Length: 509
Image (cartoon, rainbow, N blue to C red; front, side):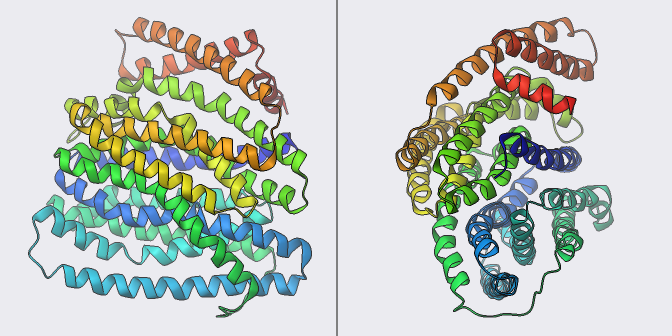
C-alpha cells in the first residue's frame, strides 16, 4: 500500500509534469489569442475541437483508464505474466478496431453533411471536425499506454505526454498558420495539423517506458476475452458518467454560441485558466489515487480506503481553496497580462475575467468530483457516477437557461459551478454510505481552517495589489501572487493546519 506521504509524492510527480503541460498550455493560448482573439473563426474552431477534446477527456483522462486499471491491477496481482499481457493486447487491439470504424463512419457522415448549404460558421465547424477525426485513434492509444504504465505506478511519462500535445499546438501559431496564408479561415487549419502532430508525439513518447516493462504484446482481436468483456462492462457506464460531466463544458460553449460573437471564446479562455490549478493538483491526485483505491478495494482493506479518501479530500482543499480565492481576486490583471494584445482587446479581457470569477467558485467541487469518481470506479461501481452526473448535467442545462440571459456568459459559468457543487455533495454522501463513515471531523476541521486562511490571504492580496498599482503589469500580478503564498502559509501555521507542516516536510526532503 502507498502511504499518504507516497501518495502525495506520486501526486507531486504527476503535478509537476502537469504543471509543465499547463505552462505550455498557457503559452499556446497566448499565441493563439494573439492571432485569432475572440473572432467567429476561433469560435468555429472551438466548436469543432470540442468533440475530439471531449473524447480526449473521456478516453485519455477517464473512461479507458478508470475501467482498464482496476481490471489490469487484478490481473497483475492474481494471474500469470502471460495472461496479463494477453489481456492488455486484446484491449489494445479491440480499441484500435473500434476507433478505425468510428473514424470511417464519422468521415463519411461529415463529408455528406458538408454538401448541404450551411452558414459560414457552421460550414467551417463541420469541415474542421472532419479534419480532426484521426485524433481519435491517437487518444485511444495514449490512454491504453497510460493505463498500463500507471498500473505499474509509473506516473512520470504518462503525465508528461500532454506536454507534447501542447508543443504540437504551439508550433501551429508560431509557424504553420503563417505558412498557410494571411486569411484567418485558412490559418485556422494550422491549429488542426499542430494538434494532430502533438497527438502522435503523445503516443511515441510513452513507447520507451512501455518497452522497459518487457511487454509481450501481440495482435489479439479477441472480443470474447473475459478481461475485455469486464472492461467493456465497466467502460460503458464510465463513458456515460464522464460524458455527462465533460458535456457540461461542451453545453456551456454551445449556449455561448447563441449569446453572440466572442462568448464561446470567452468561456474557453476562462476555463483554460481555471483548469491550471485543477490540472496541476486535482487531476494529478485523481490519477495517482486510482491504483491505490483499486488495490485497497481488491484486498478489502476498507479502513485504509476510508483513510485515503479523507486524506485526499483534505489535501485537495489545502491547495484548491486558496487557488480559487487567488483567481477570483486577481482575475482581471492575470487575464490582461496573459492575453491582452493584438486581436485580444480590453473588452475581451473584461469578458474573460468575469467568466473566470464564476468558474472559480466551483473549483473545489470540480476537484473533489475527480477523487470521488475514482473511488467509485475502484469499487467497480460505474453506475452511481453516471446517475449523479446526469442529475448535475440536467441541473446545469436548466441553470444555463435561467442565468445566461441576465449574466450572459458569466451566468453559464455560474451554472456550471452550482451544478458541480450539487454533484460533489451527492457523490460524497452516497460514497460514505457505501464504504462507511470515516472520521469526518478531520475533514471539516481542515475545510474551515483552510477557508479562513484563504480569506486572510485574499485580504492581503488585495492590499499588496493596491500598492503595486503604479508599476508594470508583471509586477501587479507576480508580486501579489508571491505575497499571497507567504500570507497563506503564515495563516496556515497560525491556524495550525496539519497539511502545511506536511508540505514543509516534503520540501525539506
